Image (cartoon, rainbow over all chains, first blue to last red; front, side, top):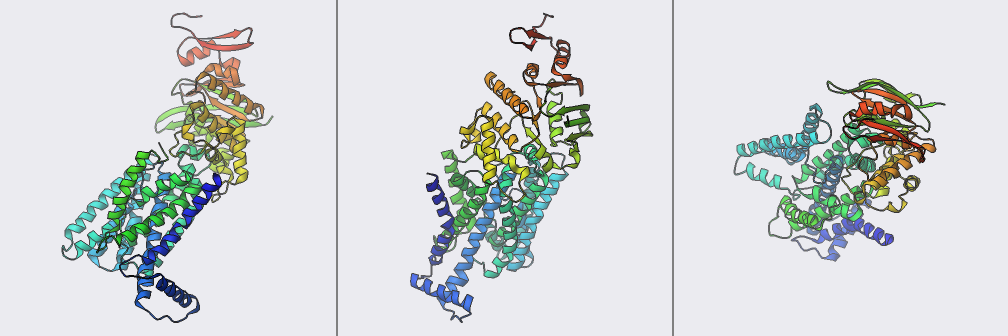
Length: 339
Length: 263
């Protein structure tokens, strides 16, 4: 029995790789298996041996359109889910999402402001990232300045910061040119990976990797933080410091994800629950599992987004339509892994 | 013998509200100190100050001669194990995963427990007699089992001083005695123990020493027999209390008297 469970768990770890390969074939432009293999071999040899590659349509579709997008989906899903799982542990609440401290609202406002000011993709990305971090710092400093202790004040500060940035986003929408900027703002907020190129991946890789590495190394300590401040302190954990490190890392990952994908809900909330059902609540196993399931889930959603209709369906819509019923199902089954 | 714990002129206050002041006592290896007192006397706060969870307003706590103020939470946790009154676990960890968290002060920041830590966790579960529950989920345990699991987690810290905050308060009669027997067993193995209790009689069962906290200061301190007396207990709890010797059991008991009957 334990062996069987072990092998099934390790099968889950293969899921993102399998989905990556399948996703290369998915899309409106037909790509037969032979062509994908052929182009892959060519791409590899050009990458490693510098063989000149003739740029065919197939090559462009596979490696300049689909692959960066697939990689982005994997990264964004993994980042949101890892951050969500970490926030749930730190805030001792399984209903917490990565946007708890206003990171989503902040990043959304940053992006909208960028669209209004200077419509460059890189600038939008940068502003979203910066305002995501800013929202987190505002919420944290507000929480620290307050007299209350524990995590509740941070949650309340997050609600306040979110509310302010949501209002500011509405203001930007109100002021935006309704024929040009407003649709751009609305589409950005609904989430999409359609425009992602390799360069964009490069920019988000560093904050994501840094955040993921630290969280991965500290993952066992998240268990102890989830026991509450007093018990964690009695177990020798410097609670304030540890909590801040985890929040900053999770925010780095969330902001980086949002900066290229827009604000995508539900992933960071639902994926940790699915992962908990598979490996249990221990963060030693939960965090890597959330990463893998999150990456797979997001890639699946992105595949759906570019196939189910003639035009692309924004990602935020699909994650909500998938995530909300899934969450309801998990509640019904009473298998949330908490009471 | 070397003093395990020295509490000197300890005081604590929330803002302007003084909880207690001028609390001093010391404890040797293998001694059990029972702290008595009415609700709100500050017993739990005192335990948390000793554990380093709360920062005292004045005074000092020394463990094996070292001031805890200069030790830092991590080093304190290697010496002092703290068993909370009741805990609310949000995520349903397995008992073994929960107990092994007591290894935290001994593990480096980035490491997770290894097989030897798991082995220590199993040993402490065996110590409290719950080996067979290792794979169970903490949220499915009974009150008595939860208390024992919390004790097991503190034991994994390999502390020389164990602090228990009202370990028997939510337990049925049988489980109260099981917890007290465990406390006695640990003391006989050389561990020093400070324990809050609502039942003065428990001091007769396990205590080598006792202290009574009332009105923000220690009103009695010493051998159990000198602290748990009818007079002291009556004044501490504000009801009439009698202490009697049960001849055939060769032990004293502390019992409340009914309203009008005074001894």
